[in-house]
Image (cartoon, rainbow, N blue to C red; front, side, top):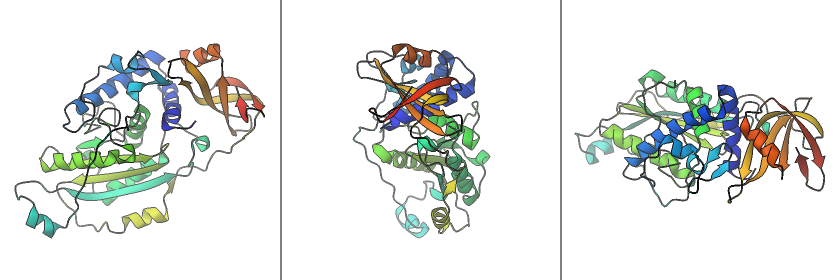
Length: 339
């Protein structure tokens, strides 16, 4: 596992198992959510891709939508190789009175929160359907902003891959039938956003929409790498009297959330249990190799690779195999575990 596209599918496979659905209806749910994101991007004046994509187009592999890492196709992934920029100007209330039109709404940073997962690395995670640091960061941000979740009009949830949005909804407490928007830009898959700069576009878009009177209060979330770091900001049209100047110092002093890391077994031979997995595709759209995260009988984490085994690739992608036994052997020449 080298890139985010190799790692985030491990979260998605776990979410698939938790859903209890067969693969097709699970992917259709993703397709509908991601299609709504593409619709938002299509109406955003600064989006990189301004084409609304139907759900079936997003989830169906094809010449222009190759499978990348199961269960993701190209249209389900982040698009970061773009030429985009954004800026936010922060000023005092006094400066705003001097320089800004009086008939435009003011936009205030009301409060934020930051947290890091004690299970820093993917191999250390015990639950691939949750993000304790995001839950902690949201609680901090709402308390510091002197508000509640019900008072937030809109969200821009960090959206590198569908699992990031699904887990954010779960951690924040946003139901599937919640009418509030989950994105204001269209997300990394359609709006774009270069590298780690996507969230600046989200904040700038929210500021513009609050200023125009479309919303009065919004929340923006951000994550780093494999959901290790999480940040949340709440913005609104009305200030509060609380001093937020030292909030970040508290987060720096005590950023950790969640459980202790899962113990790791580097070399393992025997029968393990599958915790989650993905299959990585080659550019020619053929499965290249598989990655399995599992547990030993002693509840230690192992990572195993599947090589040149078309039947096993098909078996993994036919139905969800989390919780199934897998035979693993350590291969010294390969410097790793083979499944």
